[in-house]
Structure formats: structure tokens, C-alpha cells
Image (cartoon, rainbow, N blue to C red; front, side, top):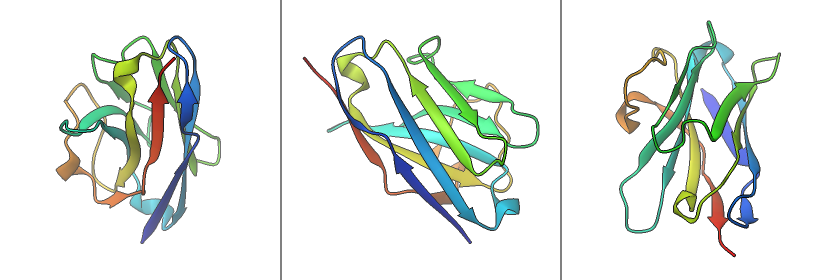
Length: 127
């Protein structure tokens, strides 16, 4: 089993930055890939970014490309989403997810491809 806990959300002004963290515990062999998803009020969930543990391959949604950066620590147990140049449309609950089989490439992320989920952290971008 794998447990995921997100942190780092909050209120930030447009143009500002936040760094989200996702701490993973449990069976470390069970998270080949870690993804970040977000869901804004009244909208469908969106796959934002993904990183593979094996080789660090990444994926970014077009909506965040060039502004968000996904990374991991050396121990491979904490994953980060650095969010810069934030916009009001980035307001959402952000959740991290893991899966033992998924490999991050240029394919759009789907929730059904990930098996373990955190509770989410809220990000509000507003002046």
C-alpha cells in the first residue's frame, strides 16, 4: 500500500508562485509514476503533470507548460510541483497520485491510470 499526502497550497496573487509537495510512504516499489491533477469548482479534473521514477521522464499539460515544473527529491519519496506565474484559472484543488505501472510520456493524463491518491491541497489565485 502507498499513502500520499499533499501540502503547500494556499492563497497567492496572480503572477505569484507556490510549491506543492507530495510525500509518499509505504511500498516504494508501487509508485513508478507520480502525477498531479487538479479540479476547479464546476469543472472536470485535469491532469497537470507527471514524472516517472525510473528515468525522470515528464509530462505537462499545455495549460501549464513553461510555468509549472515537476521534480522529486533524491530519496524518491517526495515529489514537488513548482508553480510559477500563477493565474486565476489555476485555482483548484490539486491532488497527487501514483501508479506502479504508468510511464509518463506525451500522453494526456487520465485519472483512471492512477491507483493511489492523496486528499488534495487547495490553491487559490486571486488578488
